[in-house]
Amino acid sequence: MFANFEDMCNSKFITMKRMFLIAIVLVTISSSCHRNAITGRNQLSLIPESEVQAMAFTQYKEFMTTNPAVPAANKDAAMVSRVGNNIIGAIKKYYAEKGLSKELESFQWEVNLVNNKEPNAWCMPGGKIVVYTGILPLTQNEAALAVVMGHEVAHALARHGNERMSQGLFQQMGGLALSAALSSKPAETQNLFMTSYGIGTNIGVMLPFSRKNELEADKLGLMFSALAGYDPREAIAFWQRMSKASSGNKPPEFLSTHPADETRIAELEKIMEETVKQFYKK
Image 1 (spheres, one colour):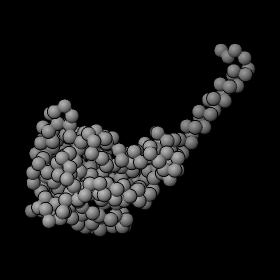
Image 2 (image 1 turned 180 degrees about the horizontal axis):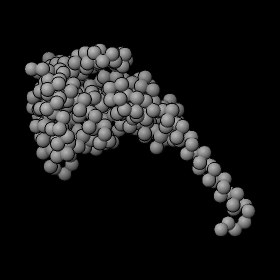
Image 3 (image 1 turned 90 degrees about the vertical axis):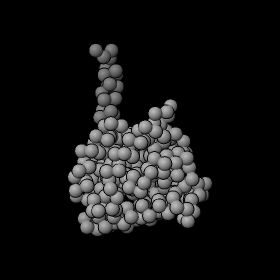
Image 4 (image 1 turned 180 degrees about the vertical axis):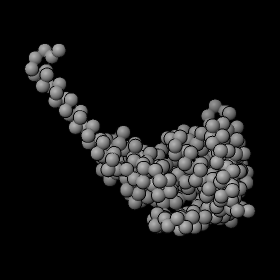
């Protein structure tokens, strides 16, 4: 029971305020949903992709300044470039066949190998792809490397990073626009970007993708590697090697955000036969 009329009014005011805030949240979420062209799934997208890509290109330039690319004449660099360009070509062709070429117009594709012992790879929004030398002993062949690169490019095309950063902006900064967040909280926003897109070299620096994101990237990555002419069945052996590599105290950075376990391998096996049949042309 309320002690007096004032307490009752205050209670009603608080309830109405909460309802108003909930309504604002629901309107913000519903107006910020984006249907992804390649996955067909609605996802939270508080940030225009053009802004994300502009920030990505800036961060990429800074990263490459302190992490120079392995010279193109190096055989490993040449392999990474070859595999990456084959995947990019396959993606462009696939998007053209689906009438989605406009989705790639803003992409400025670039593929580089950097000298870093961490087993890692990533693709920024807009198509900036980086592979670390530390992952090559685990890929062991071009087909497995294609699976890795296809997986990372799939994250970019499915806008998983935008989705994850939007969730971060909503949860940590009350849904601020990216420009406002950069202005009022530049350090926090840059850190959110780096963790959302996996740009860094420290173990565990990245936030994990959701299970749904991972399954989407696995499926699309297999398809892209197959369309590029690489046997997607190499994915099974690769993830088994990644799982074995995590037997130490800390998993490799790549593995910390891309959980390689029996469940993932089982999911890959479920779609492998159909992927090979539909997309892999020897």
